[in-house]
Every structure is written in structure tokens, then in C-alpha cells.
Length: 341
Ligand SMILES: [Zn+2]
Image (tube, rainbow, N blue to C red; front, side, top):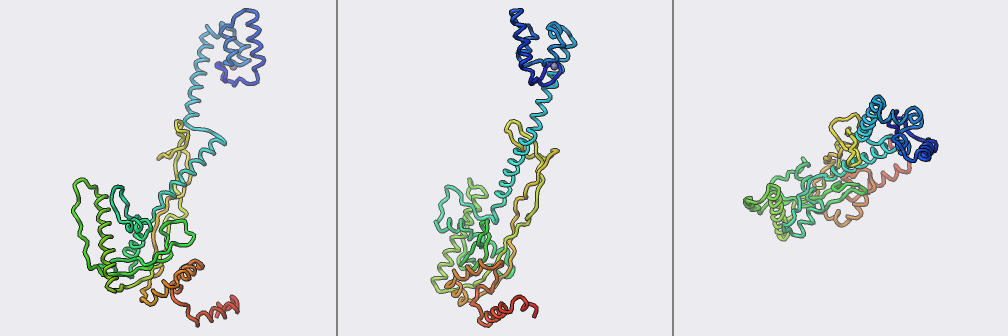
């Protein structure tokens, strides 16, 4: 407690002060204002020496001092509330904010490419749910929109194989895509938007109908023994915000007991920017069905090769040339000098 007159903190004075109050009680039989305040730690020892009970009750000078001290105290409490904790506690709360904001930034950037939504209450084929959840829909978008070397106009894109990058933390980080293109023989019949349907719901229904038509059309063509053009696509997931930070201005929220982000403040922390994803296409190659059969037959071998290398290369998808193998071997024998040839 702080002294109501001088504002000094009342510490280590308890014994002396309490003795004073007790002595007074013993001699007079009751506590006056001064001694009541002493008992309640409201005034410090020095002030208890300097003032009489009459001073405390009647002197306008002392009363004004007490009034000022009250005001000052109120302001201090208010300022403390506004600024929040200090020292170690403050550091702790700031760290808590940083953890929270970093997690949120990562969360915000988790969706790499937007897959169609699965809207509650809508009936879907199990195969469609698998299609959406497995990110095959994302692979279709990559082949359709990002690969410049493949003309997908008027084609259905059938993803034959989709490989998630080994040890990557991100869904949608693919090491390679193998897609077969079929001409569109069937045309989807799109219904009109229903009165109670939102734009998103309608868009979702259209996407689903497109998928149904594509699946049926591809199945039909496969049954007829038709084969489409096959491509290997090597995408590379890039975060355009890699190693970039945002300044978060923060203030103390005393009600919720945490720091919150505001537009302006005299304190800020640096928080990682939410990732902004982009696919670069490293390589694309059209392959024939014989090569496709080789890859599918040796898929686990091919996949494990893509995991060994830092970068996935097109050469990993063909049987290794025996001539090349020999060269590599002899280079290995010679050691690193061989590279200077
Ligand atoms: Zn005092």
C-alpha cells in the first residue's frame, strides 16, 4: 500500500506502525482516524509522526494533499492498465502474441490452390469427395492453367499419377504429375441458378457437374480403347513471401489480458508474412504410352529416385541409359576432377 499523503510505499514499517495503533488503543480505548489509517497501512510512519489526527481530519492543506495523492494513484492504475504488464511478464505476453500470430500466418497460407468446396447437405459421389480431398483437383488446375507447353483447350485432364513431394510440410506440394488428355466428346449440361442458391453454391454445383461429365466421358473413351496424350509435369511450389515479415503494431488489451494487433502503436513485433503460393513449372514432357507403362510398372522405383535427388528431373522417368551409367561410374572412380574435362 502507498501512503495517502506522501505516496511513499508503506513497507517494512508494519511493526512500528502497528505498535503505535495498539498503544493508542490501550491509552484511549478507541481508534481515531489517524490510528485507524495507521492500522490499515494508509499512512507511512513518517507521515504518522508529522501529522496529528486533527490535521488529517480538518487541515485543508493535508486534505488537499490526500486528494491529489488519490488522483495520482488513479492515473497510475489507469496507465498501468493501458500499458499492460512490464518486465518479464510483458516479455511473456509479447511472446504469446508472436506465437499466436505466427501460427495464424501459417494457417492462413496453408491453402495453396483452392480446391472446390464440399458444401454440407449436398450429395456427392464418393469418388468426387476423394477427388477434392486428394488435391487431384489442384493438379488439374496446374496442368490446365500454369503449364504453357500443353494445350488443354477442349480437353479433359485425367490425372494418372500425382506424387506429393517427399517430406514436404505442405499439402499440394507435388514432385510430379502425370496427366492424360482426352478430347471432350460429351458436353456438360449446366442447369440454371436456383432462386435460393448463392453464387458459391451454384459455382460448386457447376464444378461437380463438370467433374461428373468429365469422369463419364473419360470412362467411355477408355472403354472404347482410346488413348490420350500423356504428359509429365514437374511443378515447383514457391512461396513468394519466403523470409518476409510484417510489422504488427500491438497494444495491451487489459480486459482479455493479451496483446492485440492495431493499426498504430508505439510498439511492434515482426511476424512472418502468410505464405503466398505459386507453382513454377520446372519441366514438361510429352511421353508415349510405352513410357507410361514403364513408369507405372516401375512406379515405386521411380518415386524413390525422385526422393533421392534434390531436384526431380525428367531423366528419372526413363530407363537409365546403360552408356550413361558407365560414364557416371567412371567419373565416380576418377573423383571430382572429372568435372573439369
Ligand atoms: Zn507518508
